[in-house]
Image (cartoon, rainbow, N blue to C red; front, side, top):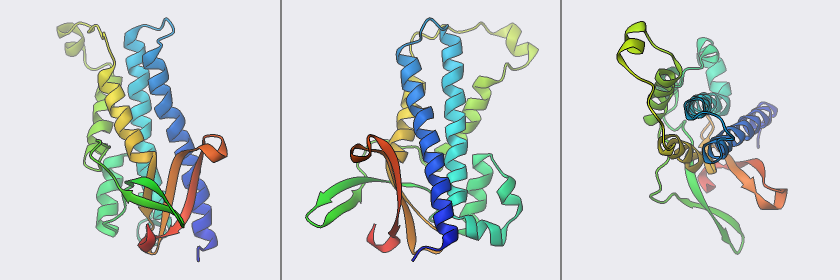
Length: 207
């Protein structure tokens, strides 16, 4: 049975997933219809959203393991860089990262099947993407300014690919809590709820 603390973390986790959904979908919206905004600015906006998504994923891992983090490491509660969060959580609990799943309806309810071969954002890629976003968003040094010209960006295939990887990870996923007995099971779009995000608690052994 879930504790009051775990239910509170569940609500925090849902809030993060609602924010992640809005940010990820905004990448597709603006890259597909620039609304007269110069391509360079669209690209910067998209990479800003990707960077925020990386941080949301890192924070969501902390929320799912909040009791463990509170007991072991007070400094970890102040972290926001995904790489630092991942390295710290790996030392505390190996199964800490979201696992994408395929929801399959059965005669008795729903089964979360193994994910297929579509690419998703792995825990190894998460800090790399965050660092890449930082490189794009900073103006850089004077030498870089003098030596380079602003590139013409005819498409946004790279940001769309990264955004899709994030959605593939989060659209339907589970994340095991620190006690190993419960999972946060997340669906970014539930038709029966008008397309809203839903996060529920499930037994880790059954999902």
